[in-house]
Length: 422
Image (cartoon, rainbow, N blue to C red; front, side, top):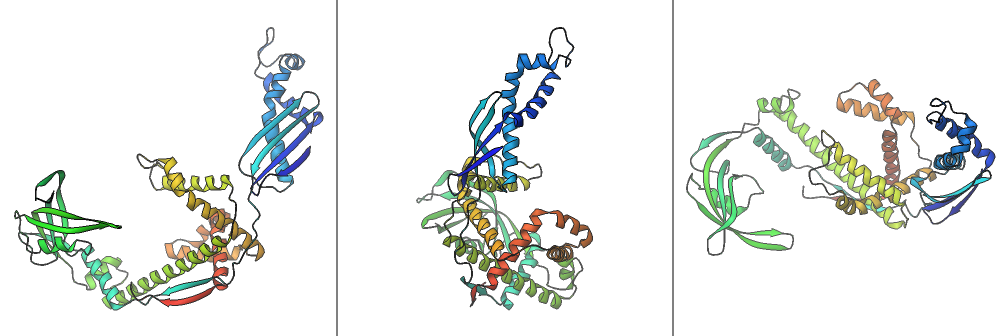
């Protein structure tokens, strides 16, 4: 086999492969035998016709039909021998077959481009530091109380701990109802911070069956418009918030915690962990964004398409029957996510190169540590989890990505910045 590799661009190569008759003959012999087993010739039972007769009658057609499989076999052999890792599907450019002499073909394929690393150490970023306040803890407890609240019927509203179910009719400037702009059974929880102030104020003295009118400015981005509503209460419910006591704590923690004071400490720790993880995630994002910004890399189309395929598979995985949402426009989705896929492809290639240069690898000890942590978090047996983790390429990729980012953070210039507001 004679192989010539030509570089067409940073991401595209072409392999010209020439095979002589002696290399082709074993493959043709296999094709003859396969064809003979199913051919029917007059005077012979199926599969029993003499091979010489099969060759004489159908030999040229059989050989031509076998060329695609032969090209595929020798193409993969050539790639493996030269340690070339093509991306996506190769494209047959040209085939030239001279029966009894030789077979020459050309195949184009994509490869990852060489990555010349720019600056990746000493990246300047900010880490947002936030200390959880008593107010934040109290607000979380209030949300827990609301989530575990009960209701009872009422005829009037006396405070914000009421839910008003009403029919809402949109009006024009003259106060005339707009056709098709009525919603029935809309629920308004007066203590909901997202509720428009004007609606809350209008409903604070609401009574069943007594309509009120509300006017307020609705803003969407840089656009705002006046909204005029007629709101007719149909039902009112009084919201009863449970006391923050041992009974509520035991309920929300499934008896894991019984003391309200201990629960507050645990809740504060959880909130602090949330802010710390958020800060670390932002540091990682900022480092990655700056490194990618510095690198001009041509991304192979096959790489981008593979990532887009993975996004769609992720969407399928969110449904029980692995189906896409009704009316899903795959073409539009791919167009909208293409920029993200290109960025992710660049970052993956840069990370791979950094790992090579800095000799960052994944050891069995790394896998063991991860399995120990995640088994404890999920309440699983580590020894059952570990064999799966050791075989999983996805787990190894995740561990390696973590080591790479840990290295980059270690060598970054990180300035602490206090975040005053939650």
